[in-house]
Length: 210
Ligand code: S3P
Image (tube, rainbow, N blue to C red; front, side, top):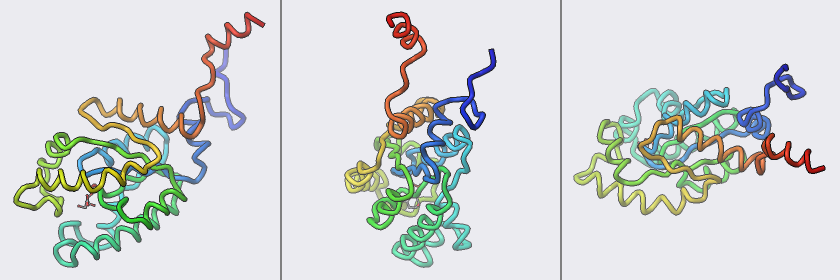
């Protein structure tokens, strides 16, 4: 028997439902450095057949220099203003999956824009996981401190109450990336498309009882 198709001819799937419900909105990933926003975001975009955008990469392209250079030459306030402008621009290019820099969601104006144009998903990682992941790279200017673990702890305390305002939360942990992506798909589907339709088995039972 041929696969059932929607009116557009696509095979029904959670991904197709999410795409239809998103319209021009983006999926925006927020959370601490090392939470996996880029890694998971890239895979999530592939699953949804959407473009993947990375705010940090776009900021570097717009500035013509690396993030550590922007911090060093112009300072953090200048970086934050540029970051807010770049994210505002990227939010006009939906549908897409957008990974944001860890500090960007702290700005009220950015949160407002994200809630207008996107569904936000917090990838929540604990301090141990973050430390293990960020140790591998020295390109986070905020962690160039005498005690990076204490800095990460302080940033988590400051930021988690704000990240909590994202529409969805998924625990980022050391499991295969595809598992986290699957959880993102399930959470997006539940949020955007409502409760799952009754399974075929349940529908069959209902039919038999009629
Ligand atoms: C920052 C996170 C970084 C980058 C910059 C500042 C932050 O992005 O934007 O170093 O304030 O947490 P990632 O979260 O992608 O590492």
